[in-house]
Amino acid sequence: MRTAKKSPEAFRTISEVANELDLPQHVLRFWETKFSQIKPLKRAGGRRYYRPEDVALLMGIKTLLYSDGFTIKGVQKVLREQGVRYVIETGRMAGQEDRPLPVSHGEPAAETEETTEPAAAEAIAEETDDEARGISEHQRAALETILEDLLDLKSSLEEARAAREEPTPEEAEDEESGEHARKSA
Image 1 (cartoon, rainbow, N blue to C red):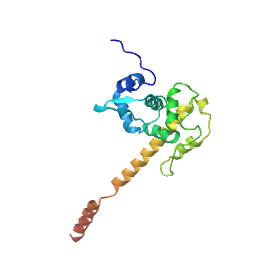
Image 2: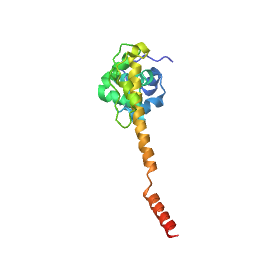
Image 3: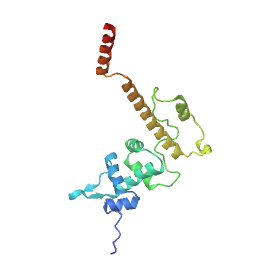
Image 4: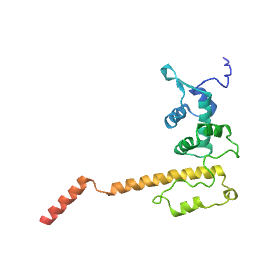
C-alpha cells in the first residue's frame, strides 16, 4: 500500500517524527520530560501529534546534543537564555560551520571560587587562537558547557563527602556513651 506524502504543515505521529529525525521513540518521550517547550498534542488514548514547530525544535535539540556535544542541562540553558527560535534555527542550520553558537567565544563557564581549579579557570579565561589548535568554536562551546557541568558535579560530590564525614546525632551519642564507659572503667 502506498502512502501519500504529508504536507509540511501536517501534524506527525511519534513514529513519523522518530523516522524523520532518526531517533528511537523513547528518546522523544524522554525529551518531552526534560524540555517543557516540546508540547505535542495528545489525543484520546495518549497518541501524540507533533506540530511542524515541535519537529523543528526537536531537530535543534538533536543538533545541540548529538552534533555540538551539549548536555541536556546545557541545552536547557540555551533554551532559557537564547529561546526556542534560536534552537529551531540551530536545527535548520545543522552542518553549517558558520551558524551562530549558543555560547559566545570568549564567555567563560559559570564558576565559583571553591569549585574551580586554577588551571581550568586560566584555560577558560585565556584568549587564545583555538582555530589554530584545531578546536572549532562549536567544540569550544560544547567543552565550556561540559566543564560547567563537571564543576557542578564536583561541588555536589564535595558536599556529599563532607556530609558523610560528619557523624549523625546517633553516632555522636554512641561515641559519647562509649567514652563515658571507658572513663568509668
